[in-house]
Image 1 (cartoon, rainbow, N blue to C red):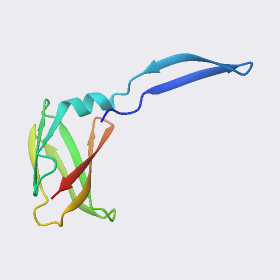
Image 2: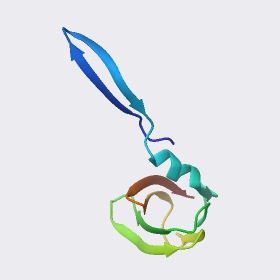
Image 3: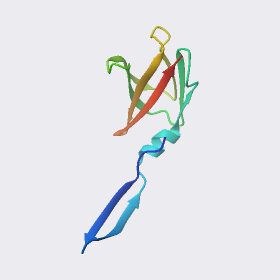
Image 4: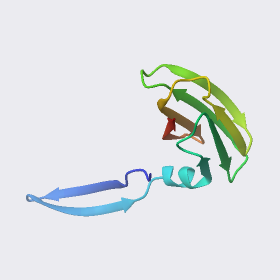
Length: 106
């Protein structure tokens, strides 16, 4: 899911003029991380094009933090097999960017 684009506008005499449109860098972070399978029965595998340090946080549907970890690898696994079925929110922090992904556990 791409991040929203950046838009700035200058309003003159009740008309508008677009002065700048550019995509955010979040899209690049999303393109560098592959997640499978999603939905899953508990194990979610992640592969990144880069071996950079990322910080991950997983929240349950109540908003409670259930996993928090720092990872320096291009492959990692999130194990939700001991958690009930439902929707979880994964936040990936890398290079001053945040990516939010829904994980569905069946």
